[in-house]
Image (cartoon, rainbow, N blue to C red; front, side, top):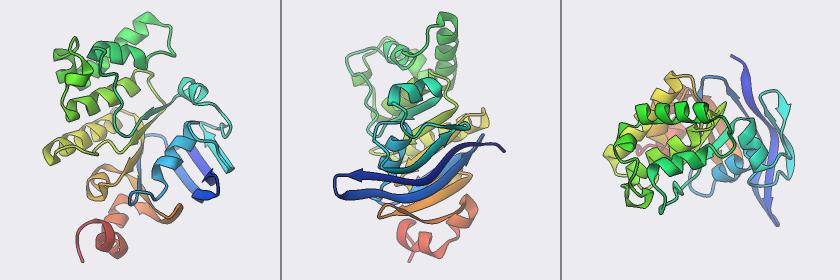
Length: 238
């Protein structure tokens, strides 16, 4: 498989604080790769640096064969990198359909935008049913579906999902993870940041474990699931 994202010695700083400390990470086309770890480990900082929302203090971001280390967030979106952010951040006073249209802001092909919207509605039938409803009146799970659907409107080469299960009821979390797996089966490459380690490892192909800004372990999802360190610290067994 061809590599679509390569992080080489990535470093992110907030003033004197080193949030990401020289990490290496690779994602290949067609994979779900999970970046796991506790709150504050540096996961979201990594993802934000990839899409240009945080400046890169050192190292290199290679996307689809190009160096995008200093690229703006808008340019990243146009090149096929789309982030569904932590906390969903839907536009609450806009309808579901208008939120999806906002996700296609970088596109000008009306027919292609409508096709993308139809695909999102096929994937999330509840959004079609509620397409005229204000996004702010949706349940948490429905808002998460809308946030993912909005990110898909640009037909990304790499979809970045930051904590998609955060704050959702267990039954809804299961549904969200199943939908992410379905996206991968449809050919979408996914970079997943999650605190829900057990759930993420059920659907991921490979995973990296992050702590204090560094990658401390990596492997296939199966290897990570059977790792004593992972089980002890993140999956509820002692």
